[in-house]
Length: 138
View 1 (cartoon, one colour):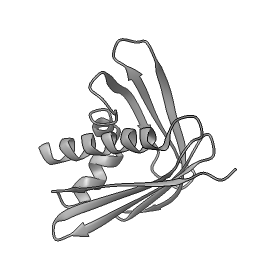
View 2 (cartoon, one colour; view 1 turned 30 degrees about the vertical axis):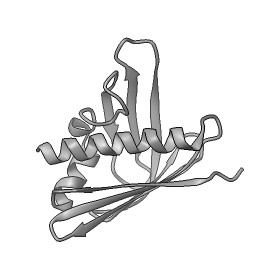
View 3 (cartoon, rainbow, N blue to C red; view 1 turned 45 degrees about the vertical axis):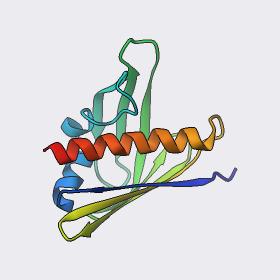
């Protein structure tokens, strides 16, 4: 089954080495990996290598719902690119581009078929916006 590809972006006012660390280290991921203030990411695990796994626990703060986001890394090019496959077979392609001391993060993900495209784009963009705010606060 073919999935529509959605692109989201943010430019972070930090050098690419810092952005890479904030994006990939579990102690940072738990501080930004959620789409709204009523959700959180209480646990993250990262084995940042080809065929390594990434797992993030995403939960509503009231405990009403939660899920594990699990993916396997397909490609790692340090400070430049990450490609991973989510458990359901969809791929995510992330580019980190140095722009005079700032870093542009572009994420292209394959949409799932259960929720509207706009909802998915908005949710992923909200998470990336949280990431930007977190990284720029450091």
